[in-house]
Image (cartoon, rainbow, N blue to C red; front, side, top):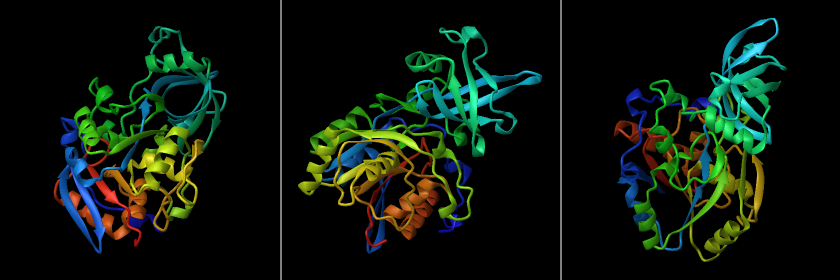
Length: 362
């Protein structure tokens, strides 16, 4: 499909720079394709009203790490230059893939020192060698530290990588370290939050429990590739970046049981959806699964396991807007986004949310 079909104009005032407070007071656009699309303006805290006892919410419990690193490149015979690197996928105990700026000025073999001084990190310097270069500023960094020692150094030197549409308008601050993390985050490794989950509070969890709605957890470590624009003219020419995830056998068994008794699988966020669709067999059944996924979902994809999706509002021309168009229908989502923009919904990571039900007639 042509990528420009997924373009739209978004006024600057619709981009959220801070989340709703409390989290579950954000707006929720209910999208129900029933012949003609039915759009209904709701509030996140009312989510239990739109689900049934026996349904299951699936959350991504990944935890955002301070994956934005600032440093200096050194090379014999060349002046030092400032380097900004956003880690996006770990491939070995001492190796991360990253997006680096200025990518064109970096060469294989360059040394990069992250942090202002060796004292910045209690463990000493956080140094890396640039081992490989790819397209679009992607590099492979091999650090001098490995395993838990590298984790601690990144925690000491790095900072939260706010999405570029927020970082361009204000600096990161201490509040972001709380706001840009779900209340159930536990598996460290993401460089971007699974933002649909940011709306949940202990009170909302209690209301879901009282309504008989199950909750289960999977892990997909969200990469910085989620922020990359689709530069190709056609979706067939776009290459997705891989992300690492896993589904436990206990979670697989629980979700199989939900489906067997007629309950619905409701994905909280596109990350949970992409992981479960990667792990599911053609008949929708699940087994324990782990590995890298680069699944790219566009209109025409036949969903195997997800019945409903809670998700924030996405960027124009993005793979995520293509995904929701595949799930609920292209015309449905164009109408939903037109409504959201005209009625002042807040977009992107800190913005409002939507609840979409799968449209099999799309």
